[in-house]
Image (cartoon, rainbow, N blue to C red; front, side, top):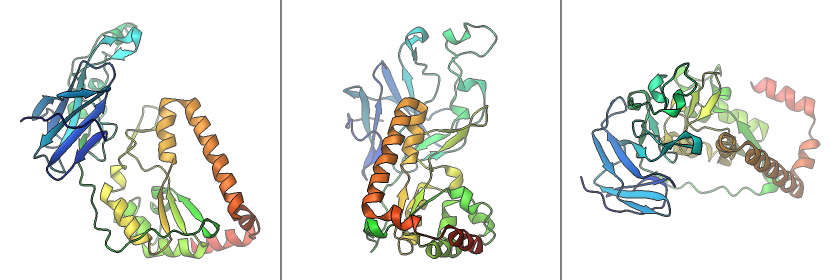
Length: 313
């Protein structure tokens, strides 16, 4: 298979109808290999080809003929110098941080570590050369198009906007009126009883709490695997479009939460996340004060609102 140079932007895997452009950032890599998989369960890639071009530390290449549904990952070579912060290890399959979808689940195994586990305090100074691909999900190329038909942005004025921030699983997993198959999923948000609940509260916009792919750590912490793809246990990427298709004629909008960005930043730099969160809250507070939303909200009878919510639930 021949790769054309492609383009360094956008990052991730981008299907244009005739093929797929792949772009990945790495400042210190000496080689980036694109790995194509026939299925998420495959322990080894069916094809491994180096990305042929590098522009401003972005490695990129274009594969003609690839289509949505293609599984992929990367193997990246470079210096293994833990003392300098470099742990490049081409034996380990890497997920694309800009992947739009994942297939499969992570399975705990020592091969996922870049160094041998053991009591030796210097063990992490050596590479573990076992293949990690059998224990990782695979990235998927997606078709980003969707038939929106006659849907239009609602453009609700800010002074009429009431945003309801909601956790998909928290709202739907134990809802007594939802079919079992809908609980804990994106589809559950489109159930008539849920939409009626939003309406009776006066909600005009639904803001989803972080919905990106997560994994449990050893301490049972939920760790984000990527900022651009949804949690597969709640549904597929296409369900985001179906939510909007069903909800837009009801509440006025669907916001994909900025907190998803917060969670990603938290994993990288807690101080940056703290500053970002503070700025976001201050800007939102000023905006709500300017529109009169906070004053209108404070004038509501809190007891009456709580009784209304309890009755609806």
